[in-house]
Image 1 (cartoon, rainbow, N blue to C red):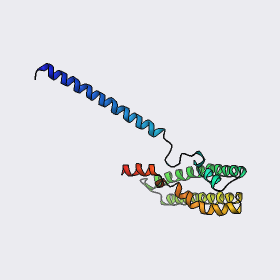
Image 2 (image 1 turned 180 degrees about the vertical axis):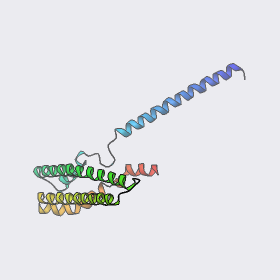
Image 3 (image 1 turned 180 degrees about the horizontal axis):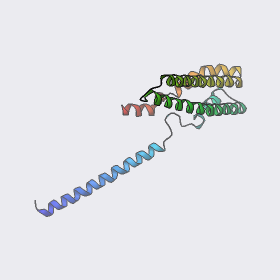
Image 4 (image 1 turned 90 degrees about the vertical axis):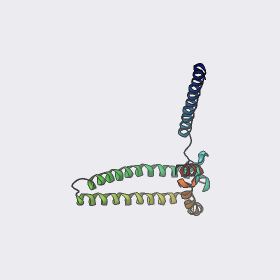
Length: 173
């Protein structure tokens, strides 16, 4: 084979590899763009089911006033929950720092653990208070439906209950 034929083959090979690289880069950029702009897998595409309030409104046949009261109740709960969660996280960070310090102060660690458990208890009591207020908003018929709906809602929002997440989970393992 003469030198000119070899040069043509090399040029064609370089062009082919460049095209493959460009197509590969484009594919990965497209997949990343698609992943970022996809709706979270935890929630269905129907707008009314984006959160528990939408499900409750539909399934319990809530009036507009009840739906607004529940939404306000949930917003208030999430604000309080956020503050408590931040406090608990900070206390856990402090406790971890104290536990792994060269000279561990056991009394400090115990005190921090008690503060964490007290705040966790406060979080659960906050949830209980929200449940009591939610029950006060509903009619007896709605409460009866709600009792059966609680487990369904819990199961519905579990991450392993969604096909897309199951696919992603299975492909990662």
